[in-house]
Length: 138
Image (cartoon, rainbow, N blue to C red):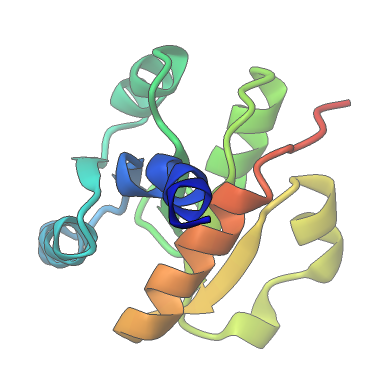
C-alpha cells in the first residue's frame, strides 16, 4: 500500500515548473519557492524564450504572471493554446476576481491564484493543476 502511494506521488516529486514573469525579483522568489517544494524551476521573461522552452518536452506546469509590461499573461496563455501546447497554466493575478471567467475557460487556465500567493496557495495550485493535467485542446 505504501509503495502504491509513493508511485502516485512520484511524478509530483519530479515536476518542472516554468515561471513567466517580467519582474526579476518575482521570478527569483518564485524559483526559490518552487525549489523549496522539491521541484525544478526554469524562469523567463522574453516571449521568444517562452515559445522555445514550451516547445521542448519536460515542462509540467506554467506559472504565469497576469500583469506584465509589454504583454499580458492572458495573451501568453492564448499563444500557448494556439500552439497546441498541452501544459497546465497557473495564473497569478493581483486581483483574482478581475480575471474574466470566460477567458479562464476559453484559455483552459487550470488555476488562478492571488499575487503574491501564499506558499500554501502556490503549492496547492501547482499540484492541483498538475494532477488535472489532462488539458483538452480543441
